[in-house]
Amino acid sequence: MIKRDGKNTSLWQDLEDLEGYHQVPPSDHVDVIIVGAGITGITTALMLQAQGKKCLILEAHTVGFGTTAGTSAHLNTVLDTPYQTIISNFGKLQAILAAEAAQQALEQIAGFIEKFQISCDFSRCDGYMYATQQDEEKELVETLEAINEVGIQAEFVDNIPGPMDFTRAIKFGGQGRFHPLKYLKALYAEFLKLGGHILENTKVVKIIDQEGFQRVETAGDKSYYADHVVYATHTPPGVHLLTFKLAPYRSYVMGIELADNQSYPEDLIYDMQDPFHYFRKADYQDRQLLLVGGQDHKTGQHNNTDFNFTELESFVRNTYKVKEVVYKWSSQYYESTDGLPYIGYFPGKKNKRIFVATGYSGNGMIFGTLSAQIISNLIVHGKSTYEALFSPSRCKPIAGFSNFMTENIDVAKHLITDKLSVSKIHSYSEIAKGEGRIINFENRDIGLFKDDTGQLFAVDPVCKHAGCVVQWNSTERSWDCPCHGARYDPSGNLLTGPSTAGLPVYEIEEDD
Ligand code: FES
Image (cartoon, rainbow, N blue to C red; front, side):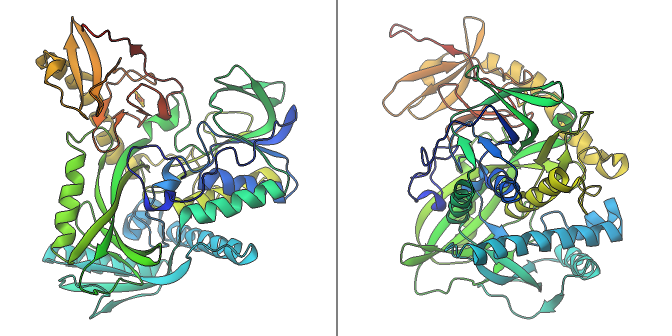
């Protein structure tokens, strides 16, 4: 089974493990080092390798360990950020360009599937969005107009492919869905066939510009050298401009078998609640499952993450007859301040040899693929049609101002109140099996977790990235940082950046 960055298992992970699939020591110097082996990293590496660039992927864990294994794998050109927002923030012409970019990414995925004959349950389909009340209807009208304005065909419809009650609904064409890890595995195999290198369990901690080339230092004190480096890790390590332009979110997905021969939707369906819910079907062994997602919230800002599944299931049961919940999992994504991802040259670096791709919102499959197109074009040809639109250095102070302030107010709140609140907790003896909590013990804040056998794990709960206090994520059993999304396992090991180090561990003796 493919490993993932949480305790819950996603539907996609049930594949032969890719770990150790092909570990090859690279030569001293490669053309491009790609950090991260999710859809962004693998697609970028394949595109560059195919154009004659010698590539090395450095992955902190294993292939597909991050959000690619936790996505719901919608392939949508109608993006999470509504086109009316993109038009408002960037102008109509740029919004049209964004829609074209998303379309091109979808066609790139379809092209790879055809070229490499990938069996990954790919299907082209329509999308539906429905309103259930007056204010949603108003927004739906604006959404329809904006979708049409950017060149995607959309119309009002009387029926949707599900049993939901609705007052108005729209349909838009040209969407898709697939199995993300079957797809990733195939691209990975193609990359290796072309002579690409990968090192798993190799964590990058620093990149140093050294006389025109990049020295990439890893946690194992070994360095690798390249002309260019691509961060395909959501958020790059360290504190930099992007640290303050990204907000981490958690999203929840359930795989449900329906009762009474109810039909599974061939298309993608979205409601208009805030946060919204999304529906698609997926193949599961020789059956099908309904995938339902939603309940999104900012990372580290929900006291009982398990409860999100209770709410999500109750939402589904109001619409469908449920036979069995077969899968449930959550995953992390990042939002930018102005609604479009940051893809291109790492901001603030003079040498233009380091690249970054992040802030995909819930459109990771599309934007991960688009990032590969943009970055490989920048490296090979020095330009991309989409360079300016998605530039990580862009400044949209008006458009992004309210989001920017909200994200940073939240960060400040966590830096202060979370440290105060721990003083109310006096004894870890109240902790139940499977529970994690921050306690105050002999004037020290300690992140304490008791596993199912009763064994205690204690960590310093101060995030190693920039000093925020981590929060316990009960459903994935991880310590999550509310500020910039770093995540750690119960033993303090780093799951996801931007931190580059784990949490310090306290030893616990039996008498304690
Ligand atoms: Fe930045 Fe934790 S991720 S302080």
